[in-house]
Every structure is written in structure tokens, then in C-alpha cells.
Image (tube, rainbow, N blue to C red):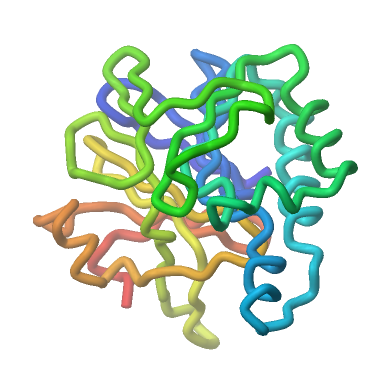
Length: 223
């Protein structure tokens, strides 16, 4: 599938072309920043977007779960675009979420967009989860062994023909930041000062999501 492996404090992780992260030894799948119902949130404020983001995001998530069959799924915060987004889920969306959770542990991490997650969507809710030497949280702190989201990293890289800007995983072997998984999510350049606070030596690698495979690009080659 053109995925990319990288090590994080001794654990081997697989960056999936979809934007999900797999820890195979734990049969654990991580996705971040689904931002479900972002389209309907914008519509409430008068900005009309096609109302298909939740369906597209859940369908892509279903495909990844079918392919990897994880024992545990961690949704790494900002799963919903606002505090009331879960109330706008259709019955079909709720049914699909329930089906995805069947037979596995599902953990919702609280994010800044959804700090008070509902308890009626299945799974468990937490602010932080630690498994072995790895800590899962929404907002990155730079702590060693941390996997976080929130920043929606994207990298701009040069090809022979043109410049491309794509979502990416960012890791220096001690910490990692996930790309946003949601269909309507934007991105923040890995050259932004927010990343310099997490990776002060700029020694990270950006695992960039291409059309058919991930491309591992050193920080110095990201524009």
C-alpha cells in the first residue's frame, strides 16, 4: 500500500497512506482530527459546504479498519468539529460508528474542538492514554514518547515538475504528530513556529502522503 515505517522510542509504527497510524505489535490504530460535521457547523454560520464530509471521513476510516482489523482504535481528539456536532450525526452515521466499534476497544481522546465528548457514542473517553512508553494526547507538548495531533501538519516539497503541498506525519524518533484525517481539514506548514517548539532542532522527518505511497522527506527539504 506504499506505507512507511518509523520507530518511536523503540516501537515500530506504520504510517498508513490514508493518514492513520498503526502500531502492529499492539494491533492499535490511531486517527486524528476527524472533525466530523464540519460542513454542518459551517452551514450554521452561513457558509455552505457540501454536506458530505462525515460520510466521506467515516467511509475512509471503515476502509482502513477493514484492512488492518485493529484490536484498539484511538481517535486522537477533535473527532467532532464543535461541542454539538455529535447531535447532528445522521442515524446512518451513528450506525456506521457502532459497526466500526464492534469487537474492538475504542477510545475517544478529548480535543480543543470537542472537550466534553458525549458518553452515548460507544467506546471510552479520556484526556490522555499511555501504553508502554507511548503517550497519546491531542495537543503536542514535545514530551518524549508522545503521539499527538491538533496541528494538522502539511509539507511543501519540490518535485521535478512542480511544488506539492500534502498532509504528513512528523516524527524525530522521540515524538510524532499525526496528520488530520477528516475530509474537510486544512493544514499547517511544518515550517511554522508551532513545530519549532516541538522539534527545536528541526531534525524531524516528514512522512508525506502521496498519491500512491508515502515519501519520507528530511525537514531541511521541506519548504
